[in-house]
Length: 225
Image 1 (cartoon, one colour):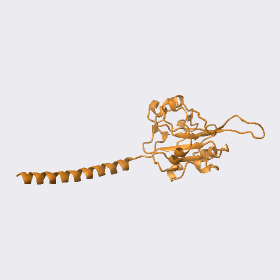
Image 2 (cartoon, rainbow, N blue to C red):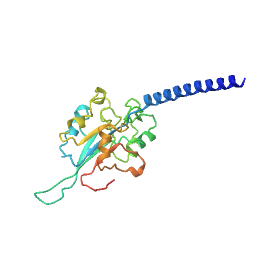
Image 3 (cartoon, rainbow, N blue to C red):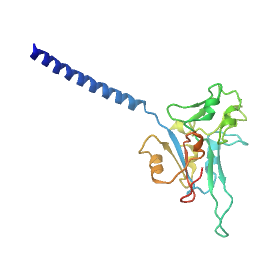
Image 4 (cartoon, one colour):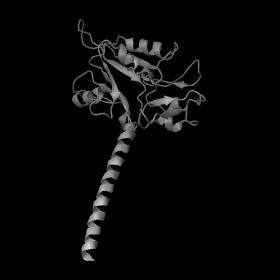
């Protein structure tokens, strides 16, 4: 009886280990299949020349009307002395925050974060134009589309270039490769590698918005928010 019990116990344990191993493997596979991307962008201020080609491409690809803009390149005041006058250029656009205030205040669910990409977007059909999202956005990047009468802003060309498997229009048009776009959840992506090897900063991180737009500062050692 003792021998049989031991044999049964060993046999049972073997089956349990086999089943557990299969379960663990199955769970791991499921977790892998459920992993999502988190799109982000880096603007390299040391490479940007302020040509505004990105702005023109954004307007054309996304049919942005005159008078409003999804993207702006802001030029600083000149510094240094002639003939060595220099400027700094700053990208002003949606930060695609992981903790987006605009999403939290939207009464209809029109403002949302796409679970598969992390992109903050607006459902035009649900937007009632209340402008709550515009008021609470600390980056001041949203506007009411003059034609659709709904909130609008940069969505990384989600329904245009990105939908066709291309890079955002601003990235494709940049002549100096000052913009890098990709999946920040992938440690081997070009954007992840760039962030690991360069000094960078994000704006207004103290607000807890968790922005996904990064900047490489124009001056080495410079720390700005």
